[in-house]
Image (cartoon, rainbow, N blue to C red):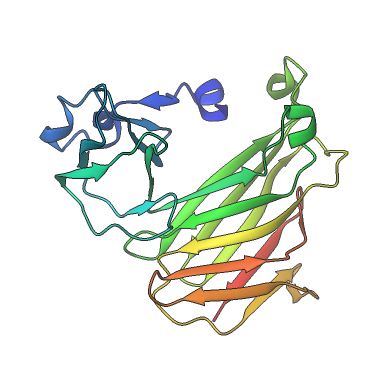
Length: 230
């Protein structure tokens, strides 16, 4: 939404917007992307329990299992029971999330986290725009917080790009999931201002799914950090 407002990009976009060189995407109208990183393959036929989907040539992870699906540049049939919408995360992107609640007033108080979906070269990037959620001209007035996330190999940099707003809810990133980690991880370090800071985090690494999960973090929104795993 921030990119669409500030730079004129699209929010909901057809596959050809991201994969224009792939002729197969030009005629697809029953799948779509949310931004550049989320591929949605909905069921459009009544009573169907599967959906035929085209998976563009990139590294894609199943949103629900965090696993690399191993399909690229071809069509496939996906299971689609009534309670399941097929959603895939594109490698190379970092998504911020927040635990939900019944209203945005309450959800804005909840812990936050990051999904780092590494691409084939172990890189990923993303941004988070944050303001008070009420002010009409927050961006124009500079009353917002913009944070960038950059992952390279085994390092994640969290950098504050614009600091024009401080959230009163003491928000923190409490969990980071890194998808596509191809080496066994034994330890994680959190650094700030060039030095390691104390952290009571807990890490788990699944060598089968290649998912690194770091929980019990306390990384304050609006501050700069570096997270390293080895």
